[in-house]
Length: 419
Image (cartoon, rainbow, N blue to C red; front, side):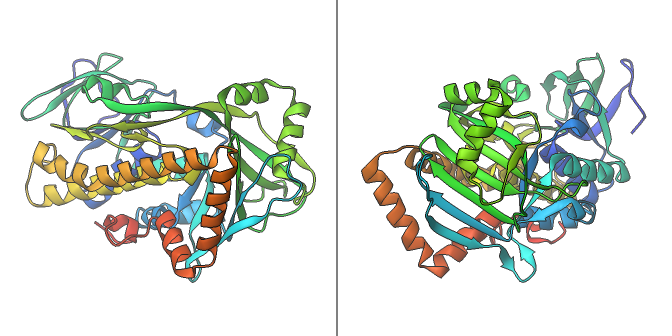
């Protein structure tokens, strides 16, 4: 791939990925590693280097960890990753002095293998970008896709700076408000929850010991997710706090002291004194499901295909499943001499991923509606159900394996196998 094409260059590629987030980079790296002869580029509208300023962290399930290991990224990420050694679930009101634990999960899906890790977004992105560079994938930053025209043999992809590429396959991994999805004429099913998610990092006196907690409160789930100790030796956790949108907007605009007081009421004092380490941010929550994942020479991946409630922490891991499945379909088609952008090839990817996505979307929607309320009879029913699960080890094992993404029908990369 030449350094940077000009307007009058005629550049032909096999795959263009729009979006240099984790899903887009993972898809590009997965295809390039298995089929190094394919010419691949990643195009991203965000300014160069902006990803390095991302202070958030993400939960990476065991299957995604195996995938990152196969892609040659995990060894770089692991020193900065915090394993979840335990998960506890409570159901209570904000003002309750005691929050009884209804459900606990051990932190391993196999000896020495945690069911999930918390990883700072910048470390994850850096490892994928390093691997992309090693594989010769060009990442074009600061310019987005302004339009594209599908043809029988190739698609013309126009960038905002006037450069045009020819490609056999265009992958849209440009987020839940995907412009490329709209350009392709793909409709969505979507609704808003009237909730917003508040995200911030907190520092606390005592170590978390790798324990993750999810408290179901009337306004929505409040998750405490363990982070690696900072370079300064301070104990840290990531907060994902769901509230009604009006309350969330008020909270993030409040004085820091007021915000910390509200946070402490939900966080508790079990880890000692807490302090907010970065600026809290809130974003509206909703459910968005694309009616189609593919068109001729066009495929959706990640949040462009599905945006779900964070109640189960599965959004990013669904995206990694998309990347792994799409890469496997494209690579296997290429090995058979088939057209990687043909609709019959891409429909294999759609059939593989659409039901799983729909199922997870419905599951998170039902969980959110069931737990984000203070209706007494429903509270009694759900607490009874949590208690039953707690007393059934096989059911708990099933749930933890589902959360870890380790299923027999998962793409090869998610099982720790090469394509």
